[in-house]
Image (cartoon, rainbow, N blue to C red):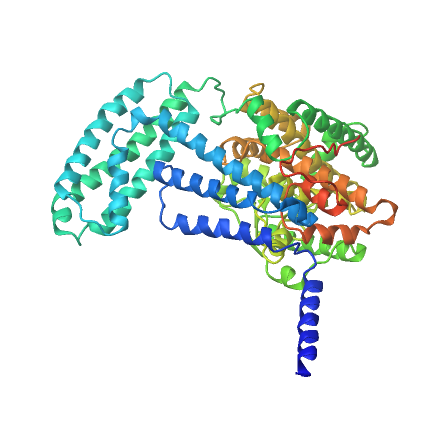
Length: 568
C-alpha cells in the first residue's frame, strides 16, 4: 500500500508536465463536442455523397440542429476563457450551417421546374446504398423520359430572359450532383445486374451527355442575360450591400462597407506619401510611376525565377531570425517545396501562392511575347522580396504547419486570419526595416497599395458600383499593375471561386493583427516574439475573438463584434 502515494505523485507529475507542454488546450468539453461534430460530418459525407441533393441537405441540417441542442446543455459560465470563445464561435458556425442549408433548400426549390426528373435519379442512389434491387425497365423508362424532358427544357432555357448568373450556378450544382449520382449507380449495377445491363447502359450514356449539354445552356443563357457587360468577359455576381453587411457580421468585423473603403483610402494616402519619398530618393522627383518602372526592369532571366525566390526566402528568414520575431520550427523550414504554375493557372494567379507548396508564376514557352514581358516585370525581385515571407514562413506555411499541431479541433477558418496573418508580416517587416533600399521599398509599397485596392474595387463591385473593367483600370492606374496581371487579379476575385470578402480580408486582417500586436506589446506586456508565438498557439479564428482570449475580455454566448481596430 505504501507504493500508492508514489504512483499517484508520478501520475500527477505526468499530467502537469503534459499541461505545461500544451498550455493552450483550454478545456475538455468544447474540443470534444466540436471534434465529434466534424467527425459526424465526415461520416455523413461518406453516405450522402452528392452535392445539392435534398436528402443530403436535410440530413446535415438535422445534424447541426442536434449539436445546437447538445451545446445548450454545456454550462457556459463555468467554461475557461478559451472555451467560452469556442462556445460562441461553434454556436455561430452551427447557426451558419443551418442558414446555409435553408438557403440551399430555397435555391433548389426555385429551380424545381427545370428538374422534374431529379427525384427519380436520386432515388437510384438510395436504392443502391443498401444493395437494393432495381426495376431496370422502369429505370430505362425514367431515363428515356428525362432525356426528352431535357430536350424541351433546354429549348426553353435557350430563350429565357430571366435566367441569371446565380440561377445558372444553382442549376450547374444540381446537374453536377445528378451526373455523379448516375455515374455511381451505373458503375455499381452495369455488368453486375443482368436486367440493368440489358435495359439501361445506352440510355445512361445518352442522359449523361444531355445533362452536360443542359448545364452549358444555363451558363450561356445567364451570360447573355447578365445586366452589366464589358469587354473583359469576366462574369461574376455582385451580392449587394445587405449581403456584404451580413457576411461582415459573421466574420466579426464591426464596420460597414463604406467605412472599410474609407480605411483603404487612408492607407492608400499613406502609401502615396511614402512613394513620393522613395521616388525622390531614386532621383525621379514626384514621378513614382517612373521609379516603379525602373524596378520592374530588374526581372531575372527566364528560367531563373525559382532559384531567385529561394534566395529571397533565405534573406527574409535570416532577417526574421536576427530580429528574433517568432519561433520557426526547423521541420517547417525543411518541409515546404517550390513549384511552377502552368500558363492556365497564371491567368487566375499572375504572381504566386504559398503554403506547403510555394507555387510561382513566370513566363513559359507557350506564352506570347507581351504576356512573357508582363509576367517578368510583375514578378521582379524587389516585388517578390516584399512578400515571400507572406507565402511560406512565417506566413501561410507556418499557419498550416501549426494548425495541424495545436488546438486542432478549432475549425473557424476565416480569410481575415489566414490572409491577415500573412499580410501582417509584410506590415511588420516594413516597420522592422526589412527594405535594403528604395527599390525594395517600391516593392513593399506596391503590394501594400495592391491590398488597399482590393478593398476598394471588391466592395464597389459587390455593391454594384463598378464593372470588372473599372476594377482592372483602377489596378493599372493606381497601383501600377501590368494590364494582363490586373485582368488576372480581377478574374481571380470575381470568377475564381473566392468568397466576396476574401480579397478584402488581406489588408483588413493585417490591420487587425497590427492593432492587436500594438495593444499586447505596449507597456511591456509581451515582446513581439511572445505575441507572434501566442497567435500561432491558438489556431485559426476571427481576430477579435483571439483578442478576447489574449486580453481576457468578456465573451457572450451570442457574440457580436464590438472592436474598432482602426484608429488612424
